[in-house]
Image 1 (spheres, one colour):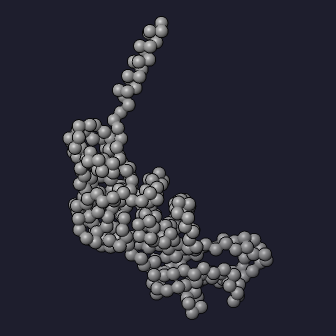
Image 2: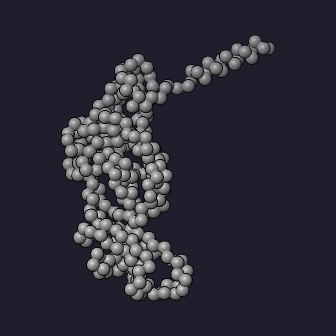
Image 3: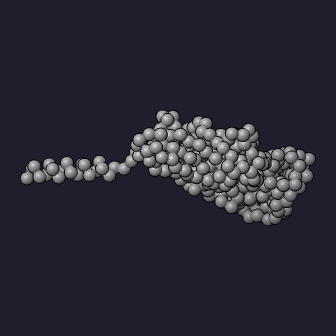
Length: 289
């Protein structure tokens, strides 16, 4: 009886070993160890989508699963074109001495550069720093392959203000990514948020710093009923955009939302003010670039 149990145990171990599956190897490791060679080209898709096609050749005699690990930066063959950073963590089976291709999720890694033309050649450069890699993992986990995710990436690659990491129609998700970034970096939560308009047209700079809208929220507690006004003022103290004027509010806590149309406004400093007659109760300075 003991001998039968022993043989059954050995058979089970052998079965597990046979079906363990091929090894998973990160692309960065495979490149560093010369396990694969990689070439890349722009797909013509938006840089916030599957912006690169990778052609990978297995130079060895092993089967394995290649993982397109997040944070790998590919640089273009031409100047003034955006580098692209991998974000999707896709996988691809590799056979000995065979070549395979895959389109991969990307983000732009330099906001002052231009979007690439379809077919433009790219080459592997380096792996991004650890905090950016952590952000990319967070964006994938929360399916933020969009402008919100791109603005979060530009905070790390180009030092963009955190107040650009915002979508007015998705405040919950905006707060979620901002909470993650502030916990990761120790940065302060913005007092207000701005909307800009990234470009995706090939050959054009991808980021326009011109502020189109500014969003702010005031919370204020009233001990007694009061008539209040809320609006945007220029540096000369003139109200240029009212939100409401001389409106009565009861004795309780209030939350006021402001949407400042800044598209046609000259660059400079402006002030969002909550006032009772001529007395300013709350004020936030905002800047239009």
